[in-house]
Length: 114
Length: 111
Image (cartoon, rainbow over all chains, first blue to last red; front, side, top):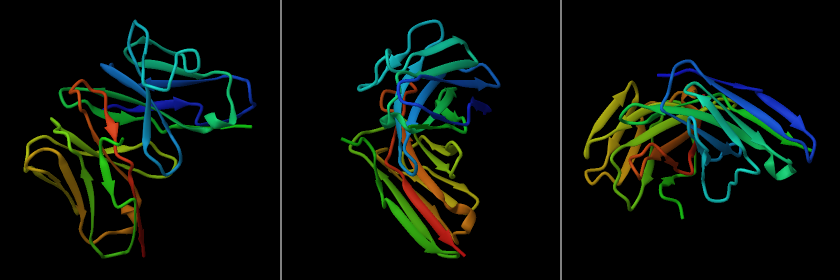
């Protein structure tokens, strides 16, 4: 298993600004992912954070809006750029590895854009 | 379209009752996972099922993977308030680590 921490745990931001969310894993992992979730609803995958190369984005998500970094095997950041109220959500990072790709999640970052 | 169909969407039961949550698909998966998420927390992995027909037990929780590896169920016996949470199934259609999640089942167990 892996222990994941995220910072900040929550934030309230103004429209047009950007927020960077940090995700730290307590061990080296093969894969890291970023998800978005509305309270009580399912998870939507934003992108796969690739170590040493550009992230792989899902349909509907673009690098200019959600730039991602992954400088090593234990750390990743997600930036939400030029925020609007529609970006208000919970952002979760996860780490996966092993043959079954079992995922371990951080506690999430609750973002409110006013 | 949703790859994984979960049902029901919402379940409210009394303590001591049993419940079953279903996760269905038309696709075959090499593995399927179940997670539980409590408010303010990230999802926590409960189990991974791999073999068709497999049954796994975790205390009062019983997980079953369909023979054809297209569906799964989660059964809770004698539910307790601590079982309250959002239950999510997830599968890895490409076998490359990128998971898709079902819509989730919100379970509320009242004392």
